[in-house]
Length: 107
Image (cartoon, rainbow, N blue to C red):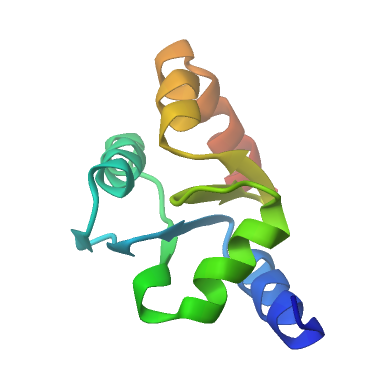
């Protein structure tokens, strides 16, 4: 990964408390896993931003290296990598995602 790409990803994470790297965007997810993440965050009613990895091949590959996680979508809360669709579903069902989000938005 180039230093420029790392800086670009760092900046995106610093500027957005909840960031989702996904296929498509929050208005039009392009895969079921990305849609699951969007639906969960919408259910929580929290502000979040998305980056469409299909529109940027450099980010698509770079985010996998950045997180050391091989799949998309990837969810970051307060700059920390949380996981993908399955992990988000699990955290949501346990009630832990709401807590993570509340703490991040309060900081």
